[in-house]
Length: 309
Image (cartoon, rainbow, N blue to C red; front, side, top):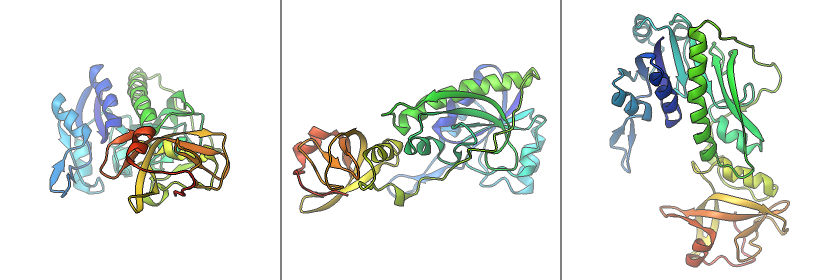
């Protein structure tokens, strides 16, 4: 199969590798342009897919937009059989969706129609879902609305973080897409319309929602923490060094204790919630190392009765 691959982050790399490893002809790779990085933002950094494509010797294109007619013409002139899209980062216009012989197929990290949109991994954990997965769908003009070709499901463990789930799903996604494209090549791929019920939207994580709200239940706080771990990280303010300092919380566990929400209940960093309590396990001050609770307490005095939030 002559494939145009479209992707940007680490999550897309195993899919590109799987397709190339099975002998498909990757005729072009589209990814987001290099972005400013570093403390001063002076260095331009290529995406993980860009870097991997150069290692593998694939031609790379980084248009800022695919709405331009010249870009659309270049895409069509590649005469691809199919485009494979995994976390590319742009909405594809109709001219691109219809520019290959067999269409565009997307690998999406949720059980559609649940969690359409930008942050399905984080949202599934934050909502307390017990299960998620990867689906391959044929793309249409809607946002993650196309018919489903294949799916693979996975349980979400009660303490699994978004980072851990991400790493599992990206490997599953690579294998699933390869199987879907192989079936497409054999003309044996079956497409099933998405259910009309159960649709939810996985909005991009905003900075304002990363702060921990201890007034909700311990389970909700726990899901919030692990759903944002390791990035961007849930946080709270603690009374440290005579002031209040922001601290990221990267892991936790619910415990059966009670008290006023936000109050430190013991010397193990157990914090009362609206119902139940949460024990903080891994923490990180701004610019500091990730520490377990006991190591954190050796360098920071957090006394019983203090209030954090």
